[in-house]
Length: 309
View 1 (tube, rainbow, N blue to C red):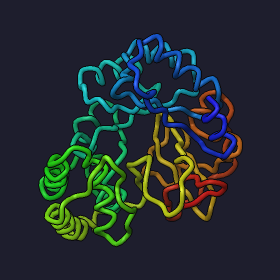
View 2: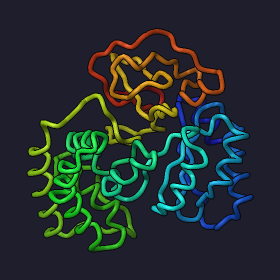
View 3: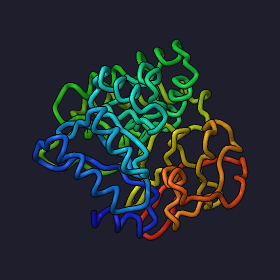
View 4: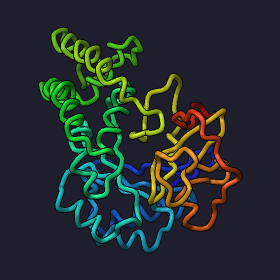
């Protein structure tokens, strides 16, 4: 709870609440943990359902009834039946985020269940490719999606699956491959072998060039991305319409309620110091200041003591 309060005070717009460490709680205990965090802050909270903290649809519904600032549900389980039960019960009450490893693999089928966005590890080192792939997913361009899966995602997964812990190692290797090293992994994780790194680097170069014409700067599939400097928290502007955030000349923008994320006029200026998030909007604490300039948008986040775009 203290971390949630500190994040809000520092200017964060939202929290991604990860599972507690070590123990496997009951549904009642898990609900109490999530609700305590929600009650401790006015900013939006996205709960990450995975591993030892998998919420049922009934538990999630009870939490939503009591906590208007619970604005999102991130699925890291991959149980299609459970995801469908959650969506059938709660519908547009929440924004749904895909959180499975290499989420591009599941993006198209998950879209049919209301999961309109996902966190992309590939975005860290191939942002244009990741955005292009997301465009294809939202357009339901099956041919383009399958092209991306066959030419990069599936070979990427094959390398990742060659050793335990490579879900992190391969992302750092990707950063090194494009000349923006994020440093070595920490033990007990291990680095890719030279052969694996060579295969990854070859895939990076060929696929990013091939898919670049599809890049759409108006869409942001990820709630996390790489930046120089220490990130305190990624700013999440969550609503039933969208999880996207944009920035122009240092002005934070949030989606207008009910707006489509590809509409450049659908974003209004927000005041981060007021806990500005679309989840707060639903609770009546958030008001727009002016219409957004429909210029080139950029991903918006908060670093310690300052904003960056």
